[in-house]
Length: 496
Image (tube, rainbow, N blue to C red; front, side):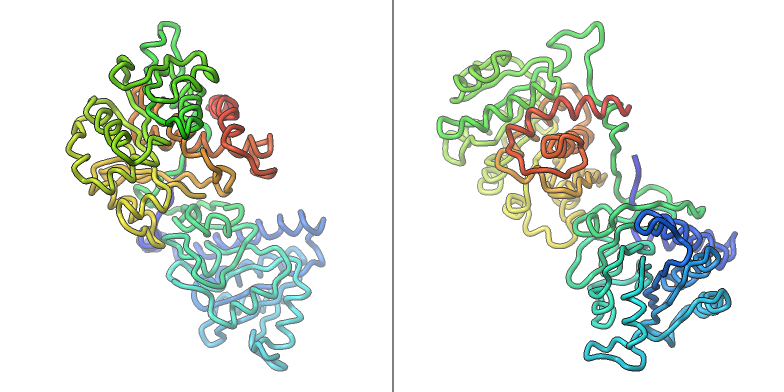
């Protein structure tokens, strides 16, 4: 498990640190780490460090200072270093001086011989010769896309990029990218990850994130990210004294005569997520029985028998029959995971909320379009939008995406930064609903149940696509994802 802290939290922690440790000492410690990871990247891509060339993109302030100090440490290892100064009059003076003393070269990015883009001839040559580029353009205080000169420099880079703290042009709070921005192969960050490392486009553009401890006392994180080991340790498994009933019985109300696949996928996911027993209730009972004979299938919720949770919504429709299914499930007083048509029904008919038992946990799992129907466009700041909606409706709310966000009514937020789009296929959400339903039936806290389920769901999709969990492979269908759920559970259990 690890956290992500806002820029404000990081700045406050840095100020407390600077009261004990001189700021230049902290900067050198951070810059040394950047140099180490840059040298490692050089070695991986060029089979050596000495006689290689690194170009620094240096903006104003401490972020540029970190890059300059890193250049000094690289010079000690025989690396040629050229710093391209984007704001010469605002360049970190001590960092610039130490680079020059170490034999590094510093030139203005918009120097003599500038072409139509404004880039000087020497700067263009330094970019062309670079084996690795260090991005020290802007720091955590910046917002918005790169300015034109910086954008043009970045556009010309062909070498791998090491970003200092966060790729420039990525919003540090939301991970949004609204224009030109850096795509790094490695991001070296200090003290703690930032939301921009695990959210939205920032997740992808950060590449591999290397965290360096510089002695910050950050307090409670803004966001929490679960590891395989966290999920495996908390995943419910039967004890020697468990029965099929004590492990948790999940009810599934999904699918219809027109959409039997939704019933099969949701029910199958509940089975594969190690539920003790699955009861299906709905018009797709025959297809469910034929595909999954271990499921007890009936035609209606009233005939389903006792359950500890309900997974409801995929394929039930938004007409009168779907509305009645939802009403019965909400009135049952059990934990509920509602997806797809449930969200549309709740958004369109506020009276359905009155059927809810206030003491029973309710989870909603929209994609972005469904979220917009329920609570409005989430915009660029998805975390704030999801947190506010969870509080407003008193639900645990899971917003799907390459960074899935899970917010509890009390403000806690989990993020699952999958970083790939393999689950973006029809029926994938049905599988997620079934997994969550099974975990709710086991008695898990609904916020953690969603976090565990999102983690295993993304891992299962990656395993199905590639066979190795690395997300490199061929597109998949939801049936392949479903069949990979047991292997994903085994993987996280092995990591615990």
